[in-house]
Structures are given as C-alpha cells and as structure tokens.
Image 1: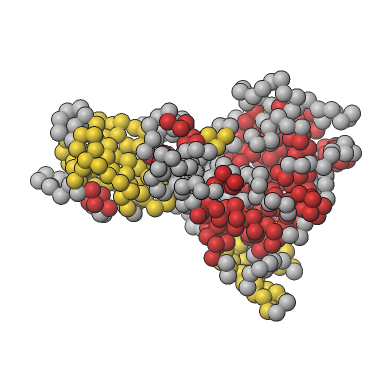
Image 2 (image 1 turned 90 degrees about the vertical axis):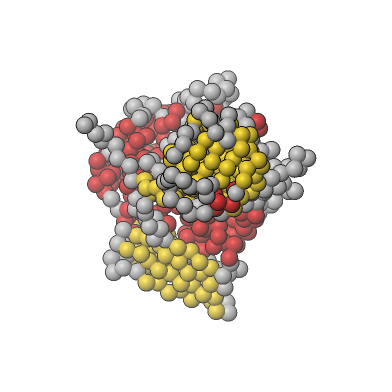
Length: 554
C-alpha cells in the first residue's frame, strides 16, 4: 500500500445530545438522548421513528467540530433518505440552502444521504452545535444518534480563575474557540473558511501560548503557508498577512526559544524580510499589491487591507503601516539572531523612515489601536481621545484584541476588562459557547439568542446580521481570531510577560482592577508557572511557583 506522508493527530469522541429543541411527525424522539451502541441489531424495536417529512432538531449543548454518527434500524422503502442539516445556531439548522445566505461552502452542512436497513453512517465534517434529522422519501427508524466530535488529543495546561465568574467563562470560551480550530492545521473557522489565514493566526497563536503551550500545529501551519507562497509573493495574497507571519515567527520564538526552527527556515525568512524592505521605497512610497482576486482594483487603498471593516478606507493605510512597524521590529530581531547585520540595519532604517511619515491620528478605534501598539501614536492619548468613548460601538471580534492590548499598554486594564465583559460577555448571553467571526454590539439589542426558535417578526442574532463575506448564516460562530480576551487576561490580569526567549525570564505584573483575586497557570517549555494574586487593602500580593529554569522578575 502507498501510504500518505500526511498524518492526522485528530481523534474522535462521541457526544450525546443534551436536549431536543423541537420535533414533528415522529415518535419516541427522546431515545436520541440515550447512550446507545453504534450498532444495529436484529429484532430491535427500541427505535425513534421519523415519518416521511418529519424531523427532529438536536442540541448538543456546545459548539463541536465533526459530524453525526447515526444508526439506522429500518427504512420504509428503497430510496428512503435522511437529510441532516448542521447549524451553529438553531435557525441555521432549520434553514434551507440559500435562505439568509445559508450555504454548503467550505464544509457541507446540509446533506441528503440515502439510507438502508441495519446501517451506521457517519455524516458531516463541519462546525455545529445543532443538527436536524429529517426523513425524505420514506419513513426512517433510528436506534441511535450522537455527534462524532473530532479534535486534537491535547491537554490544556494553562488556566485562569478569578473572583469574577464572567471573566473566567470568557477566558475558557476563548480557549475552546481556538482549540476547536486546531485540526490538521490551525484554521480560522471550523465551518468556514477552514483555511490557514495567517492574519487570523496571530490572535490564535497568542491564545495557544497561554492555554496549550508549545504545539506542533503552529510550526506545521506556519510552514504550510510558507511552502505555499513563492519568493516575492504575499501570503494569502495579502501584504499585511506576510507582515503578520514575520511577527508570529518572532513571538513564537520568544515563547518557545526554538532557535532550530528559526534556523531551519532562515533562508526563506530572510528573503521574505528583504521583500518587505525593498517594497518600501526611500521616498516613502511603496509597491505593495493585494491580490485576493475579488477586491476593487480601482481603490487606491486596496494594498493596505487589514480587515473587512476598514477595507478601502484612507485610515487603513495608517493601520497597515502600524503592522509594518511591528513586522520590521520583529524582522530586525530575527536578522540579529540569524547573523545578517546588513539586513538588520536596513530594517532599522525603514522603521525610521515610516516613523517620519507622520500619519495623522486615526478616528477608527481599530486603526488607532494598531498605531498605539506601533508607537505611531501615544497609547495614553489614543485611549483618552478615542478608546474610552463608547468603547464597544465599533469594536470587532478580530481587531478588538488589539484594542484590548492598546488599552493595556495605556495602563487602562480596568477599561479593557469592561470591554471584555460587555462585548464578549454579550455573545455568551446570546448563547455563544465559542466566539464569533463577527459581532456588532448595537445590533444585539432585542435580538434572539442562537439556541432558540426565533419568531418571524423578531431579530435573529445569527441570521439577520453580518456583512462582507460573513453575512447571516454564512458567518462562522467559532472563529479563531475572536479568542483575543484569553491571551489578554493571561498577560495583563494574571500578569505574565515573556522577557527572554523560551520563557527563561518572565515579568509577573498582575492587575486586579476591580477583582479581589486571580489564580492561574501559564505553560512554558520548562513546565507550568503558577501565579496567585490577591488584593489586601490597597496592595496586591503576588505568589509565583515556577520551574528552576524560569527566572521571575516583578
């Protein structure tokens, strides 16, 4: 046999449905809430019969990746089919293809399967919490059904626990969001796009560092995009994504200390840096080209794509060049450890050039946050002028992470906590068990949550909102870029900052803004670091238990 070189670290577990949302034209639906063998047997009349045209909608309690395992006992006639519709919300599972942008793009989720007597079938490979079983063309008797939950068999080493139960839930929800996207590669979403988008991965890898620690999937995914991108091209066709790749290389090395990985890819890394440096001309112009294939080529700001909300706007250039600064700083460091002094000096020269371009202050909080992180604007000024005013009005699940970081840099940790609880907490109020690709806070007023049937005259938070490529049911409700609160809380509330590569030196500076205490675990290559911080009067007492190889400074 000719075995493939590609191996999967994904395992399958079987999950029983938590409840039945609704059913019609069927009998003994409650049997599908029982743990039964995934095996048909002769003479079994302990079955759920779904009559032709009837259906059952199951709720598995939280977002999953995988499909359904269904054991068929009997069918009424040849040609009997089982239609299985997966949904990240109740209303998506009840929709038809084309309704409110419902689709089978990227991962088929509305599937018609012909079924026969005494068979067990596995259907689906997608992201879902809800699944509808509908009999088509004849009655179908089912003796068992469960979710086939596909995931990596890895331990979550990190932890976060505080006196605020909502913050704790948000940290763990962010952890689960990135965990489900750790399949054969690190994806952006488990329903769609199921692609290795480097721009999304920065927030995801930040979350992985403080939850699961060093994982091979990060190197594998970084290499996948590298090997898919020829010299002189931009990763995923987007210049800013190549910049994020360099930033990730630096930050992942700072976390893991794995110099051998950097050296293995040194030729590509240095060539990639040379491409970035040469694209920025000495007179301040550039030759960046964004080629996604479906953008407006006439837009003068197309090359500066950061995210959809700011695409094509003048301020997107300010945000883009903020990422340029961060990438050049990362590049300078990588050149230093790889011994290319000439390229290191070129990076430093281009940093000075960009700093001299005097970008105007941004009015969009996402772009202003990136400028603060790149020191193209003062973080405290940005926070006072913009970030602290109507803080969730135009925040997004992707770049909202960088708004949190900018507020942390400005010393406004309590303000960042308020945003986390209000914005990401609102998703949880609306039924989220993982965080979403897109969420417009003002639109959520009076909207129905994802886990109920929405009356026709009411607002459906999933089906009635969204924009760009994530309109209505096409939007992913488990999107890795939305996991930003998890690394933010570990960094600024638990207080862990990596100072030297491989976590050999950590700065611990816990912030208990409004909290009585926080306890947590931060995984390092040398073992787990345990932190406890408690407020006593106006003082914060911090205790740290770390491996001997890890130096702790305060």
